[in-house]
Length: 89
Image (tube, rainbow, N blue to C red; front, side):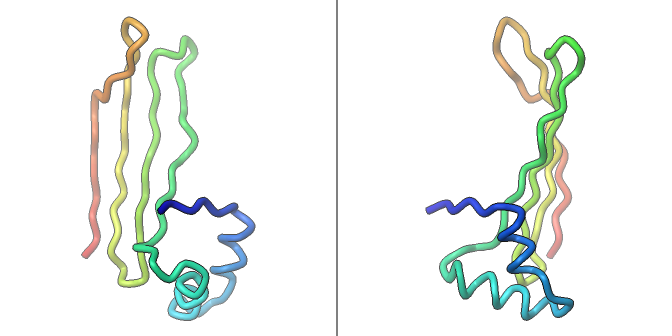
């Protein structure tokens, strides 16, 4: 199951200075979660034929990944042209 949370809910759950307590708050609300996934807004070029976005996933065990996607649109179809990834742990 996927649950979407607002930026206000995120700020509420991760409001403290203690990272362990912040994750405890999160897992009290979402006990079966494997962590948090965030997507950036999509950035487009002027003629809407190129796009870029990023995807981030992380959890309380400091596992995470950051992905960048560069896409192009040809004949009304979007294709991934470049994909980069950075992982932790």
